[in-house]
Length: 296
Image (cartoon, rainbow, N blue to C red; front, top):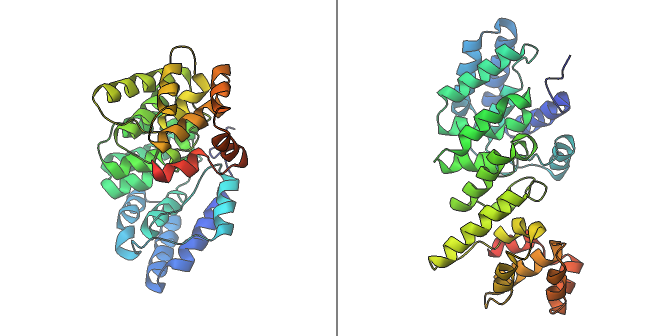
């Protein structure tokens, strides 16, 4: 039988519960425990849905704190997964989704799809953020692609950033659309999970065209864009790298240096050798795309 979950669900569930227990009020925790007991007794889907909706009325919207040990354990169990920045009610909703039995794929996916269809903004944030934890992960590709078309900023951010699901499961066109929309909507590009691993030639070509449009309009180009072009530097886009290398903006030149360091294109290596200081910073690990991100 195909596995519903592609990770150790019991361990992840236990870690999330520990955080909820530590940071809930007694009343909030008692309510959630009562709802859990009731759900296990009745298995009434309507009660499951009502609890998912009601959670913010009983658990706070304060941002949780996550110990380094818990953060590391979660990343170990699901590569790239984090609950950093979550509010308590969002985390409780994610945990609650793990209480839904997944042995019947049709019933499970229909129940989750119904939650998506009926969700308000914060519920969508919880649902899309929970994608890496949902059972039957291949079932959520279309739902994720649909979410990328959203115009709600926090919903887009829940899909795009610190979420390993899109990089692992989206087809290339949908993945490229996600990255492009992240640039259009000015999301923190460096927080897109799997960014370097999913770099591809069509995306690099589209991003280069996008950069040309920005320059033609007299507008700046996000330095992280060159991170995705770097593995595909060639004779055609080489003048673009040379342009930002010669920029008076130090961040753009640093982006050019990082792109050259990532590239297999020989002229890029020759150019990088011209600035020994930048070359050494990259070698030392003090200049990275993540280090550059706060200044972009």
